[in-house]
Image (cartoon, rainbow, N blue to C red; front, top):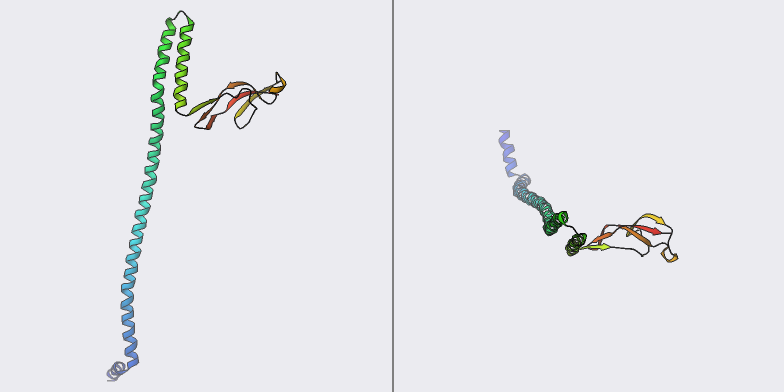
Length: 180
């Protein structure tokens, strides 16, 4: 009977009833909030994973496109040079049976001009710095010789190999002889 009295006291005691009723709704309210947070967390993780995968695919696609662009660029240059190669082959066959040198030399000169014109269209520009002041930024000194005249001291006396620019960027420095 004492158990029944204690239970009756708990039911009749308003302080105990308030505590029990307040805790139950709070726990019930926290459960949906936790579920909402978990769902939101799962949604954000899914978005992150998808975004990361999209970015990774983008990087791979750009790398693949860059390789294709490089291949296509070299293909374009090669296709433009093939007719010049054909001209050289014809000139060599003609040189085998030629009795005079002048027509063969003229043909080689025409082929050279055609090649230079083709390369210039692609952005190549030759540099012949003979007579200019030596500049280590643009020239590579092979040797120094005594200057033939006083005004050629510190200047380019002779060019061993021309330098070349490709679209205003040096791709080969001119190899020069400098007067001292």
